[in-house]
Image (tube, rainbow, N blue to C red; front, side, top):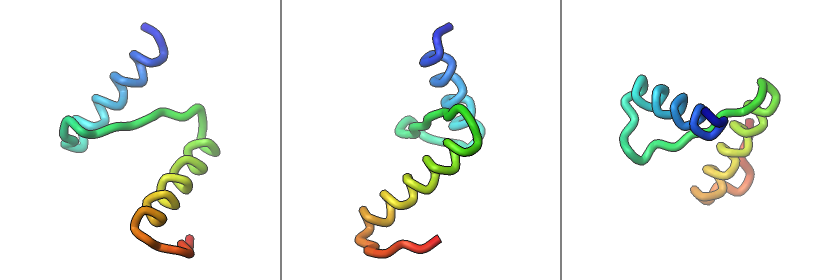
Length: 57
């Protein structure tokens, strides 16, 4: 299978493990550093959407 298919299968399996619904989405990264950067960006974007002007870590 191609990479997109493999990613979709992994995301589906993990979503099932955590009782996710049909609206669950996900992505895979190539390594630890990229994963950490993506997590930080995601939480920053969530904070901005909630109106938080200066999020802290």
